Length: 141
Ligand SMILES: O=c1ccn([C@H]2C[C@H](O)[C@@H](CO)O2)c(=O)[nH]1
Ligand SMILES: [Zn+2]
Image 1 (cartoon, rainbow, N blue to C red):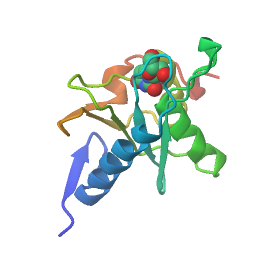
Image 2 (cartoon, rainbow, N blue to C red):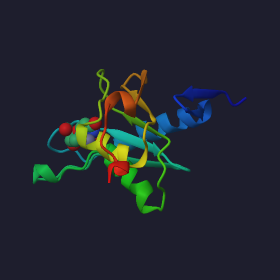
Image 3 (cartoon, rainbow, N blue to C red):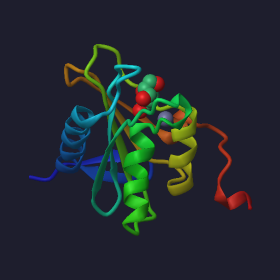
Image 4 (cartoon, rainbow, N blue to C red):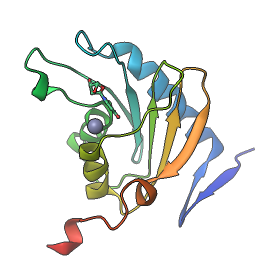
């Protein structure tokens, strides 16, 4: 059975959500975080799933967040339409995508579901519209 879960104007199959969550959870195990010790994994659903982890650098400002890493993997593969994003961390607290990542998501989705996952596998559902209201995007130009 493939239960559809409605999100705003779109919908996602329950199986798609579960796989997206699993991919985000796997991704944080590949994080390179010798400075913050805060691993983050993300999975971006385009026509398929692209995963990414955060990658830090001794020159701290060069750090790439997990969300942008995952999204850019999709874009580099030729994808343009972002359907959902999952973000997972190992700790008790839920993750929250930073402002830069929210704006990068906005480039490829007007609005999309965002699933936040903590280390116990608990989930919080939000959306890009909620995290980045009154956003600036490509349609302004
Ligand atoms: O949503 C977030 C927030 C932070 N980070 C990373 C950047 C850095 O490696 C570490 C601490 O900021 O967490 C992410 O990957 N995603
Ligand atoms: Zn970020």
